[in-house]
Length: 109
Length: 113
Image (cartoon, rainbow over all chains, first blue to last red; front, side):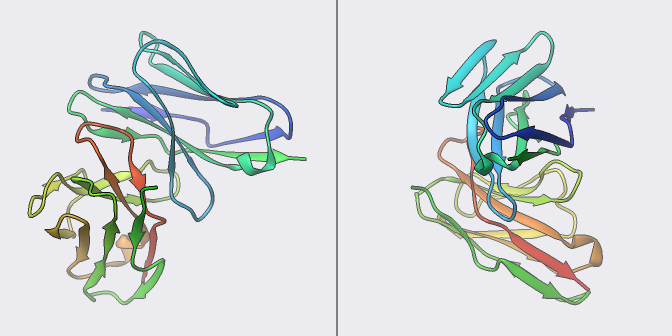
């Protein structure tokens, strides 16, 4: 079966750095996506990785290792507004998105 | 900015009622999707459509149907609501067919009593 694993919940301090991991087992691979979802709001697209390595976008970076079936989302200089759920999704060989259950990130002052 | 609008944020229905969830997008996207989101589970695809009057079953289509009469509108229909369909329903659209970059609506939280 196809599977995406990410931690259920993480806590971090304002101003710090946090890394949210995502491991996957899918039938083929056509890209990995990260979304942010604030409580009661729509998920919004954050990043896309299809090749190994790090993609940086401001305070957020996303890393991919296809051989290890592993990705992480790195958030720097955490702000209170970063409190949200972060969803990892992988596009399989049929171009279907497989979603993780999401990681709820709690930021403390 | 792309805007995906779902007609109802909160609905309460009774078992056996017919339920319509409407979704409209304003960016001329060909592709539209309906997902449900439940605690502890990843998003699950119910139906999707790559063109007007076209529909494809997703992973969990049982108990649902869809309608796409116009490009901008994609409706999800629960013919006879059941309590296990209590959930958050998310509509999404995309510019490209084979992309994971989706634009989501804010969701419709349905409670079936």
